[in-house]
Length: 224
Length: 230
Image (tube, rainbow over all chains, first blue to last red; front, side, top):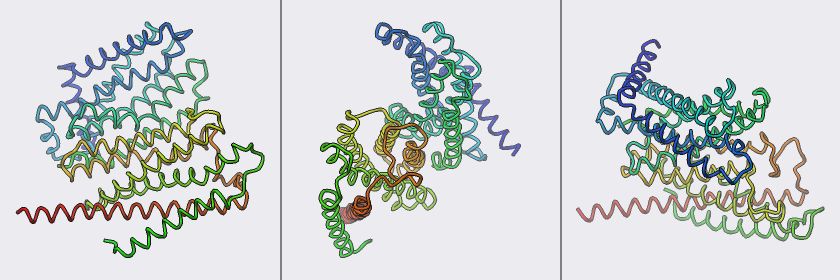
């Protein structure tokens, strides 16, 4: 077990270190998110009585779309550098590779969200950031990272892999996004988190369920 | 391989059952009470709508089980079954959505609404369209089968949630099979309803058997051609 955790940590640290040096994923996602916020801001500006009404949707649309950019890189960059085979040949349990990469993706997404949330506060003039909201965003992000990482491995060997990833990812992740949006709406309307228990359960159930399926099937995705 | 004779019997039985289902739904089943003239006719769509919706679920369940069997056993025939059943599932999903939409126009006064049941069902449809896009994007048969199997396992998680969604969330979609409530159907209606479900299930089995036979034929032709050309 200790050895397994060490492998996870090693894969995680490798990905984080690559990212710290290149900053490809972070800059890509962050700039894309800022642009998406800008477009959404203009899209809604004069059409609705109060821009704050659309903040939950804006937050989750931005997060979901930006995440596709970063998630895809997890395996595409390995493949392009030719290091994927090396990683898979390592004499370790492959699910540990999955967990390492998933946790790296999770960190990348969370960092981008910490950049996006203040931007939304700034652009949409709304008090958004609170402990319950951060929890909700984190739960949604776990779902995105869990499913996105295995689908990134799934699409890396296909034609038109960049096109395919969002098409595979979004319908699977939709229940998580719906839960996240509903809870964000509730929190912005001043409801306590305890009143949103149903959605919370939905989010947690999906996160766990998808994590278990990913753990069970990852070996088949990278088997060559 | 199923013999030609069994297939013929299955086809004839399914055809007869479907004619019977039309008779049961339109003639034998009593008209609903407490409804306006239009709604009374619209209500009969239940004999078509519920069986097609049920079959889409059954078809995706078969895909799910076949996908697991493929991953465990690595035999191509399980993947073939998964794919053929998913095709039927998509067809039945579209049929159920269309018939539901026709019913919703008089009943809810709209063709479409973002009700949880309708929303989750739309997600299911998109999931299996994505499943076929994934298949289309991979050239190598063995890898295609493996990846598609993994994806369909993820996708199937959505199907029971669709079924449960009308119980978990507030919805305007009627619940017919609820043990806590009355069946909602009169005795004459129940007979027609159950008959239609069974008839449609037979139709699914017949379609699937024919579809699988077609696949085997395609494979045999390909094998024969390869042998003749070498």
